[in-house]
Length: 371
Ligand SMILES: Cc1cc2nc3c(=O)[nH]c(=O)nc-3n(C[C@H](O)[C@H](O)[C@H](O)COP(=O)(O)O)c2cc1C
Image (cartoon, rainbow, N blue to C red; front, side):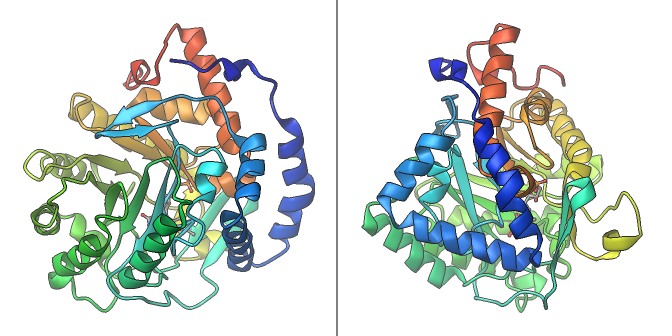
C-alpha cells in the first residue's frame, strides 16, 4: 500500500545544499579521492546511532514495499554494487533511505585493482567512467567485516546483497571455484548474491557470460547453496539479445532468482576527451541501453524472471521508465554522485505520486506495463 508520507513536502534544501556546497567541493578533487573521502565519512557515521537517526530524519522517503525472491524490501530503490566495495559503511545505506544495498564486488583474493587514475567524471553528461578492476579486501576480510556489523547490532533492516567477482589472478577455467570460495564464506552473512560476469575491467571476465561458462559457475554456487539464498546474475548492456536469451535459458535449471540489468558499458557516445578513457561508462548515457535490455528480458521471459534495473537513474521519471519496462527493483550509483543523498527520497516521492495518478496501489502493478 502507498504511504501517506508521500504527500509530505519535498526536501529541496538538502538538494540545494548538496549541489551548492558539497558537490563543488568533491568535484574539485580527483574522483577516487572524493569517493574515498565520502566513504570514510559514511563509515564514521555508520558507527554512530545518532548520525544514522539524523540521516534518516532528512532522507527517508515514503514506504513503497516490494516483496521479491522471498525478501521484503521497504522500497524499490537500492544501492548499486561498487559504492561500498569493502562493506565499510553497511548500516548507512538504509539510513539514507535506500530499500536495499549490494556490497562489493568481492573476489576470492584481496587485490589492489588497476593503476590510478581509474575513475573519471564526464560532468557535462552526468556520466562516470571507471576501470577500478575489483579493488577489494577479498572474501575473507569481507566476511570478517560483515560478521562485525552483525555482532555490533547495527546490521540494517533492509536486504543486503553481495556482488561476487573473480580474482584477476584466477584463470577463467578456474572461475567457478573462485566464485564459490567467496559465496561459501559469505552465504550466511547476507541476504542475496549477484554473480558479476559483466564488469569490463577484469580481463576476459565477460566471456563468463557465455552460456556454458556461466552454467558451470551457477552449478558450483547452487551446490553450496544449502540455505537456498537468492542468486542473481548481472549482465552487460553490450550483450546482444541472442546472448541475453541464452542467459534466460539458465534461469530455471540453475534456480536463478533474477537478473540485474545492467552493468557499465564499453560503448561511448563520443570518442574524444574523457570518453577516450577505457573502462565502463555509467550514468545518463547508459540509461537508454539498460532500459532496452530490461525490456527485452521482460518480454522474452513473459515477465516471469525478476529484474533489477540499473543504469542512469537520476529521477522518478527514469525510475518509472525502468519499472514499466519490466524492473521490479532499481539500483543507483552515478545518480547518487550527481544528485546527492536525497536522490532516493526524491525518486520515491515521485514514484508514489505517479502510482497514485495511474490508479495503482502497489508498485508491482506497474511493472512491465510499457513492455
Ligand atoms: C566506480 C564504480 C565501480 C563499480 N563497481 C562495480 C562492481 O564492483 N560490481 C558491479 O557489478 N558493478 C559495479 N559498478 C557498476 C554499477 O553497479 C552500476 O551497474 C552502473 O554504474 C550503472 O548504474 P548507474 O548508471 O546508476 O551508475 C561500478 C560502477 C562504478 C561507477
